[in-house]
Image 1 (tube, rainbow, N blue to C red):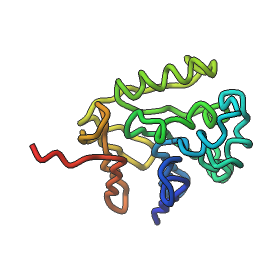
Image 2 (tube, rainbow, N blue to C red; image 1 turned 60 degrees about the horizontal axis):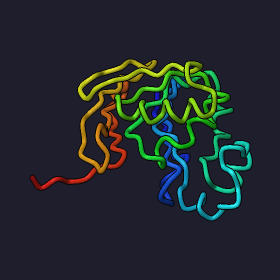
Image 3 (cartoon, rainbow, N blue to C red; image 1 turned 30 degrees about the vertical axis):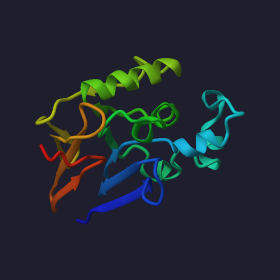
Image 4 (cartoon, rainbow, N blue to C red; image 1 turned 180 degrees about the horizontal axis):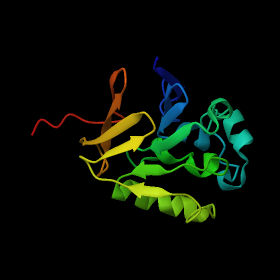
Length: 177
């Protein structure tokens, strides 16, 4: 048994944050963001009317072609916080992906507005969690850990797997107080 950490977006740029962790037939996904700078490069375009392939081609949302390889294996999406570079791509990817989305109250409040705009609200399962909660996602157990950031309700994760624990931080800030 081995763990695969798949960097889909956000590692060589600011934005498009998305990471998958895979063990055998179980996959969890962390965040699904957009690339804010690339949106401003295309001000002449109504992003809400663009198709996912156009957005991928322009580098606005993560390339979700990996999703075809893990189709049916994704146990859930867990969100670190409600900034666009972490949740902005969800309405586009969730059109074809039917899995529960786990996030804190504020994060889901922001996401619900996005899903309503795309007529997906009520069509997907949003599971609201709090820091300290632990959820089971296939072979994974994700513990939500409160972190300090420029937006309230941000979390990191301790992902317990059969082969060890993975810490996934998302964005955070050190608070000297």
